[in-house]
Structure formats: C-alpha cells, structure tokens
Image 1 (cartoon, rainbow, N blue to C red):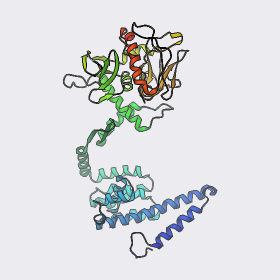
Image 2: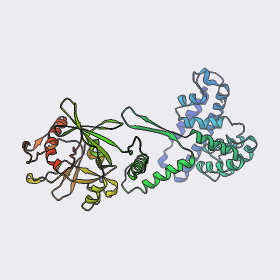
Image 3: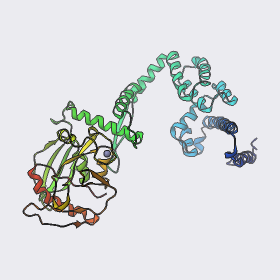
Image 4: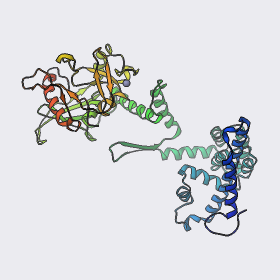
Length: 453
Ligand SMILES: [Zn+2]
C-alpha cells in the first residue's frame, strides 16, 4: 500500500516493492528458460503490465475529475499526459477515453483483472462505447466482451462498428456527416523546399485513394528496398503523372497543367534552371526532369544574368524517345537492376566517351525512375559506359574525368582533364559550351551528368 506521506512521488514502500519485483525478473537467466517457462513468464509480465495500466487509468480518471492540470500548469488532461508521460496524442486520448467511462466499464475492467482480455481490448471497447447512447451501452459492452475473448483488438473494432451501426444508425450517419465536414487536405511548404501534405478523408473517399495507390504499387518486386511510405509517395506522384499525361485535366489560364522549366543559357551553356512555381532547381534535377514530360523554355542571359531573349517553349515527351530506346534497352541499364523500361526515365548523358578519342553520339538510356535516375542526376553517382556496351554505376562523387570533343571550330582540345570536385560547376559550364555546339545540330538537349552533391 502507498503510505499517505505526500510528496511528489509514490510512497517508499510502493517503490520498494516495484524494485524488488524488477530485480527478481532481472535476475532470471532468460536464455536458460524452457519454452513453457518463457511463455508463462511472458504471460505473467504482460498481465502485470495490464494491471498496472488499470491503476494508471484510475489515476487518470481522478486527475481528470479534479482538473489537476490547472494546478500543474497545463491546458487539459490530455496535454498534461502527453507532456509528462511521453506518449503520443492518440495514446493519451485512448487512455482518457477509457478513464472517463471507468464506472460504466466495470465488467470490462473485471475481465482485464481476471486476465480474460487485455488492456488493449479495454481501450478498444471504451472507444466503441464512447458515442453509443446510454441505453445501448450495457448490452453492447456484453457483446464486445464476448467478442474480445476471441478477437484481437483490431478485429474488435470492426465488431464494435457493426454494433454501433445496428444500435445507433442515426448517430453513425451524424458521425459520417461530421467526418465529411472534417475532410481536408493541407499542402504546405517545408523550409527545405519539399511539399508537405497533411489531411484526412472520410472512409469511402479514403478508400478511393487507397485503391488507386495500391493499384499503382502492385506487388513490390523482390529487392525493392523502398519503405511502404516511399512506395505510397511514388504512387501518388505516378497518379499525378498519369493524370497530366492523359491530357484531360482542365486548362488553367489557357494552359494545360504541366511542369514548366526555364533553362538559362549563357553563351550556349546551361548555367541555371528554374521550375515555374517552385524556384531555382539544380542542373541535376533538371536532368532528372528531362526524363519526364515537361515544358521547357530557354532564356538566354549574358554574363550578368540580364535576359537577352526567350526561346520558344517546347514540349518534351518521354514517350517517343522510349519507343526507340526500348528496342536496345528493355530495362534500367544499371547492372543487376531489373526494373522494366515502363518504370524508367530516359537519361541523356553528355556524350559517351569511348576509347581512342572516338565519341558516341549522346543517346538516352533508361534508368529506373525511383532509384537509379535520381542517384545519377542528383545523388552524386556516375554512369560509366563499359567497353562491352554495358554500363557501370560508380558510387559517390569522385573527380570527374572529361574529355572535350575534337570537332567544333572554337573547341579547344583538352586531354584527360582531371577536375577538382569543388570546381566542377565552372568546368562543366565550359564543357557544355563545347558540346552544345555539336549537339545543337541534332536538336538534342545537352544534359549535365550531375550536380554537386
Ligand atoms: Zn535501376
């Protein structure tokens, strides 16, 4: 028992008992326990934790009745629990939902004390009973208790929802209406330029989104290392790309929704890029966008950045390039990567260098959209052609060896120029300038091999 002796912590004897228990458990050599014994200990500890949770619930209830948070300088019981017991808002809310119905939940509490159901079950039951009309509460609780002995807490939620729909159809309709009004999607800018998303959808509309994302995610390939959250983000972007690609979205101010990039060129070299509505982007990001449908417009500037003229905007499709390239490369060209070309973006490297100064024309190769294209354009990786016609992906940003082309009247010959990584932007500008001459003839857009990491 707690001694009544006040103070800010539980009585000395409670602490002492707890420590004795913990020391005894700690002293057990768990590796030496047989399966049976391990199972028994786990059940004992789990049941003990549940019993302690019930004790916590009694105290939360008292704390809440007294509005003790005032005295302790918080705005609500929920805030105090969150701030002082280091749990999430959702967890604090569950605890409070249970604590506020402690009296009505007596049969449930008893079942936890008996070890028939878990404390987690009790939280789920409390959540389901919270909004039921009082008269329906008692029989519903009996039903839920019965279901709890054979279902896990998640299944129990479904049973509870069925009961609520049966016993309180009006209440559930009102709840659906409230949820409809609470629907929201908030887009906000993170300081680093990423787009933040936060929101909530009513269940049916939420299901619509979920179905689309699940369909686009499909069954992840073996070796797919993306987290589920990354897969969902990719699927959402894919959904948007398909909507834009289908061309059926309404025009805005006479224009179809489409990414628009302004590429600044100075004396024929690409020096900077800007994504309309976003702001400056790295030349690496530009290279990655060039694997996707977008609108591109050139802006010639002089050395001081003053605009000389604007080029015509041109649409850059990835699909017609894809057609032709897919006959040579059916999948991502990184060795070992099995992503098919339909999930790739076409990457244009400046010019593939081959032995003896012979230079291949700049050609596109497929790189998978989710991993290798971002790695090569923005992640500091390099794609190197091999003598056998394959490619190699080299990790990290290492000094870049660049050889100038032989052609081009004003191009100066540079042999095996080794570039200090810190000077890369300036030197790349020069190289692009030289290559641009040659590539323009073929109306190919030169692409910088990468940006500074
Ligand atoms: Zn790949």
